[in-house]
Image (cartoon, rainbow, N blue to C red; front, side):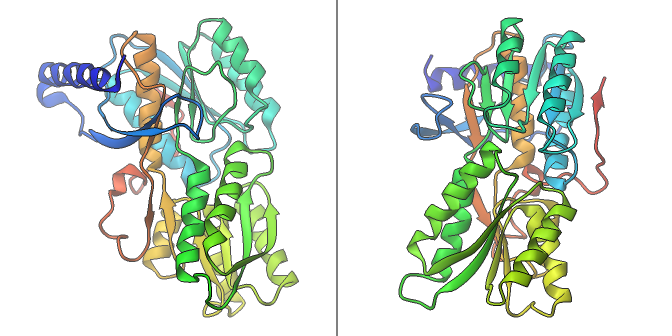
Amino acid sequence: MSIVSRLSKAILTCSLGLFLLGTQASAEWFPYEVQVWDPPFNMASPRTDFSYVPLAKAAKKWDICVSFPHMKDAYWLAVDYGVVEESKRLGVKMQLVEAGGYVNLNKQISQLEDCVANGADAVVIGAISYEGLNNVVAEIRNKGVPVIDVINGMSSPLLSAKSLISFGEMGFKAGEYLAKKHPKGSKKVKVAWFPGPPGAGWVEAGDKGFREGIKSGEIEVLATKYGDTGKEVQSRLVEDALEAYNDIDYIVGTAVTAEAATSIVRSRGLTNKVKILSYYFTPGVYQGIKQGRILAAPTDSTVIQGRIAIDLAVRILEYRPYQQHVGPKLYVIDPQNINSFDHASTLPPDGFKPTFIVK
């Protein structure tokens, strides 16, 4: 089925549902501008711009299990907000489990097996490992349960759909932003680079993209330090880099790295010397940019990825038309657009706390 025909059916379904729901319909987050990869599951595939319109309501109260690597930072809180709100809007049950960190692959596998054993109709996975979940994905799919890959990426060809962007492009946009500030022929700047946990697919992609993005500038990567995206781990890595090198111009890395680095740089009296850049976006990064402590960060519309993952699960369960591989358009947020971008696409509202159950 062509993208155009799928879009027409989706719009018709949504419009009819909204008409029937009347004033009880939830606040609309759609249509939302995304891109569709075709063929799917290959980040090198051509992309087509697409206005995403979700279903108005699920046909029944499906039971969806969502698995995250952890809930230790605000990035996953935003994805949580997306899956929670879309589950409520569509009228499905949702249970979220989290493995406690990127070192706990076996725990994530066990949690997923438990989800299916307990009767989940569909599974949404934010993967700890790009390769390490392939066997459990195969087991789940063999039981006829759809599997949606959200945010991080997995290599399994048996996935039902992907709601995610290219972290390679996120890394590239951060690198490109830096390169434009320090183009070829200008004075060379030195960077400490913190891509995230070793072995995670999104980290490998982000690292490759960042290094590609800086090629057009006068930029030297002094050190590359991998580690879990907990604040304690990232703080220690930043401290180690600053101890080892006294000529760092930029700290670039995960949102947790950037958030941790702001206070470390300030406490060391390096605010005017060391600048900070994140390669994805969180509430802490948002505040850092507003306060002038973080230079910029690309956004992947985290909340929207969570929403689309739930909608895809319902579409597949109900044999509705769907896009197999879809992700929001990427753009960089800096002081020029910090007050004008669509906050609800990326940030949970103030006061939102981790939510694990939608009944």
